[in-house]
Amino acid sequence: DIQMTQSPSSLSASVGDRVTITCRASQSIYNYLNWYQQKPGKAPKLLIYGASSLQNGVSSRFSGSGSGTDFALTISNLQPEDFATYYCQQSYNNPLYSFGQGTNLDLK
Amino acid sequence: QLHLQESGPGLVKPSETLSLTCTVSGGPIGSSSYYWGWIRQPPGKGLEWIGSIYYSGSTSYSPSLQSRVTISVDRSKNQFSLKLSSVTVADTAVYYCARPSSFLNYALDVWGQGTAVTVSS
Image (tube, rainbow over all chains, first blue to last red; front, side, top):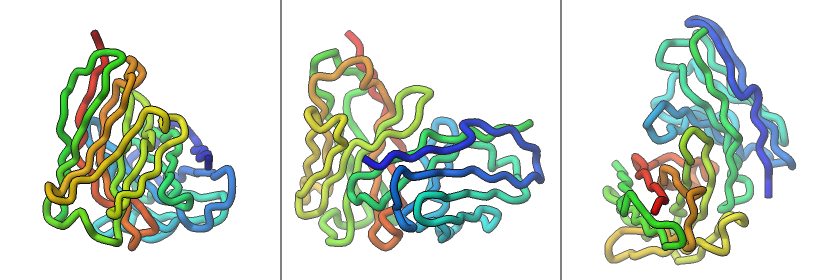
């Protein structure tokens, strides 16, 4: 199994801030790393695929970086609608995927 | 526009089998480019990958659930299904179906809305 470890598990920030969430894989997954946003009571929404490619319709305030085992999701100029839980997911070991434990981003 | 919709009982008794169906609309399930998958989320917890099925019928399951999981596809109904046997309260969760896309590094680009399943006597 490929284990995915996100940090931090929770994060408080203000509107207009820039925040970064990191994700580490237990082995190299090249660029097979995806990021999702989940709001309460809703299904996750794909934000970033292939470590750094922005999904259609997603705000350019979201960006992804990294390769191998270390990855990051950065959200710039935080907006009220960005406060949510974020998950990373590896798709290298297709079709046996795994998720990070999630990062809860809330309003300071 | 592809749409996924989960359906099935919201309450299952311990030791019984949980059965859910995901209906795919807006496109054929039998496309050679796609897998179809199941994910669950216990209350207040994170996402857990359950398993997936390829259009051809080949399957892959999470090692932690492999002994209890069966995923199947019905191309005539454009549906795929999940069966989880011998359930316990630990299987209480929201269950999602989703599509990994080979065009997007197998990211899950389409999700159902999720269906809540409670295991209780």
